[in-house]
Amino acid sequence: QKEVEQNSGPLSVPEGAIASLNCTYSDRVSQSFFWYRQYSGKSPELIMSIYSNGDKEDGRFTAQLNKASQYVSLLIRDSQPSDSATYLCAVNPGGGSGYSTLTFGKGTMLLVSP
Amino acid sequence: KAGVTQTPRYLIKTRGQQVTLSCSPISGHRSVSWYQQTPGQGLQFLFEYFSETQRNKGNFPGRFSGRQFSNSRSEMNVSTLELGDSALYLCASSPGHGDYNSPLHFGNGTRLTVT
Image 1 (cartoon, chains in turn yellow, blue):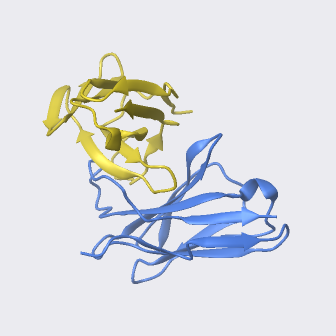
Image 2: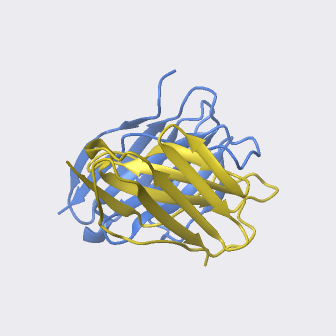
Image 3: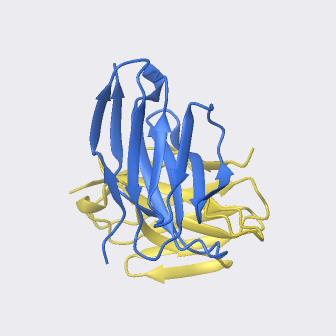
């Protein structure tokens, strides 16, 4: 059973702080990794993808991947109240057939207080 | 470019009935995946279709089925509804051409309530 684990939270941070969200996965051969944001009552929206070890930055967001430790993280700098949402970590195990199947963690709820 | 479109947005059904949900993918996307989301279990994979063929299937009972048409539009059907089927059903599309780095793009979902 391929698993993706996230701390359910809530993670509470003050406005302007750095929020750090973590995710571990069980399938060592997993190939690609995604972070989705989901507001209450809405559908998930993609905010970051990462495929290689190291950091990837996009605006206030930085994704970090460590395949040896099977660990993915998302840092949100200068957190805003509008960042309050559930953040879903998703993993694609890859494979030669190119299946478009992601395994999702249950998500971490982030609360940013003004 | 239009996003993923799911219809209807809301459904209320009675136990024992069946339901059909519809999904139109982003233009040019040939892969359509379906997920069930509940507060307790999170997002769980139902199945994925590519070029009218089911390529992958999650661990759901046979009451859950789907199909894909030649224009890549997809439907999922749930027969003999149970209370536990109440959930948000999400459809997602991707190009599907063997590139596992392509993310999924989600529709707004169909909220199914079974009474």
